[in-house]
Length: 317
Image 1: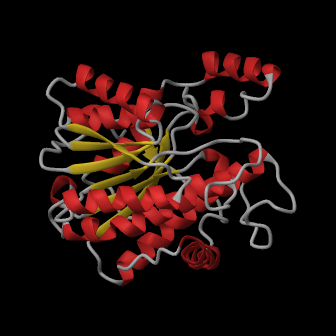
Image 2: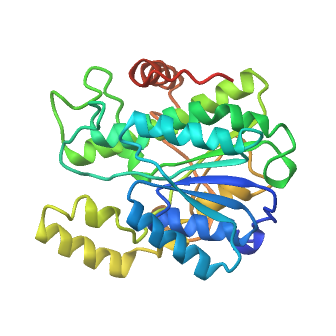
Image 3: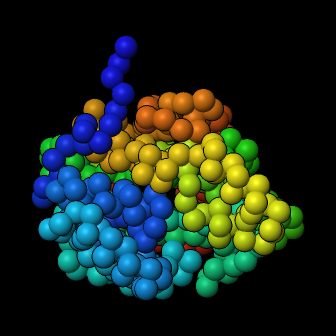
């Protein structure tokens, strides 16, 4: 029987620079803590400066001597994405070894970003698409051996088991004709996997030194539920609170698949990690499958090209 992956398997990350989006709480905070504990220089990319500053303090308390810094990033604003990327390129243009596309919103009423995108697709996918494209020069500058475990740079995109409910609505991508919070979330998480796979395909075709991977946390206790489906309903809040108490795993456990994707020396481009327990809800990280919709190459190409049109960012590999 193969041994289960644990934090003890995370390699020494000294010399690695990592950016983690949504690092102020939950999965992003736990991912940042463990990357810093392993020796990485971690950039906490956070929207809220006050919560970001609290997270920065938490990392420093939990990992004395951590190489960590806070930078402002609002994925719902392309202007913010550009400003953040410009700063990272200025500081780390000679080599960024790891980008963890973690931030997101879940099952919220229909809202739009600063650029007019439906909020869930705009934040969870389009913001990360633009960020990854803008940071590619720094990621590629890491070269074939300058990244994690002596390999190339990695982009880890955090998806969700809810992607299995998702459908790419080419004729109504922004939910202008019909919108429900969960279907929009499922589409956004499906988009994460389509993006991961198309980025991998393009990197492979260009023989570029870059690994593109994905992970999902299973059912983890984070603030996503409180700010999403539970926010507008006391009944839903009570139900989800009960379910999280008895069925969910901690945010620290939920971060393990992302950490494995980020650090496992044996990981390959295109790998997708999730918990090994019942229905992938909790447990140790293992390779997991995805739906046929997530493996649809035509949809992945269409979404990439549409994302270029919408964001104005054309990632070059």
